[in-house]
Length: 141
Image (tube, rainbow, N blue to C red; front, side):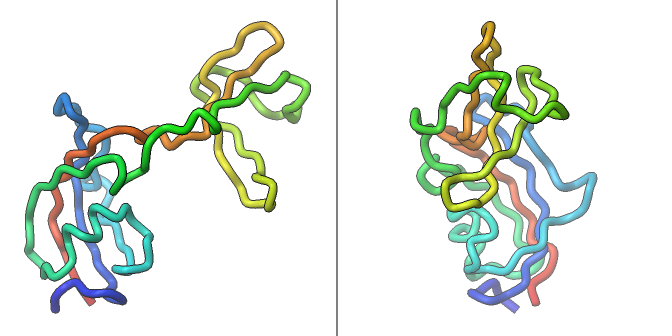
């Protein structure tokens, strides 16, 4: 069976940056499973694997606009320590969860703490990056 909208797909991947540094891999933890056409994975990967079948292996370079988009300055904000619950550990690199105006959860990375200001970045860590994938389709149902 070939990958088409509505198909349940299982695949492995290796993800590298422009310098060739390994960012992520599924080979040690097991394949990713998603439904084609449901926007459960990035657009560039869905497009690349469309029409392929189990056993397919390939490499693709995905630009930011087909991956996690570009960084937005609107998602970089700061808050005072008083805006966080007591159980939140305020350390650079930590991720904190809050809600957008509609009540949906949104994650922010703490990028800097300067006195009474905690700088937060709501951009995806891979926003603005060109991604280099190696994929292997395991199964298609």
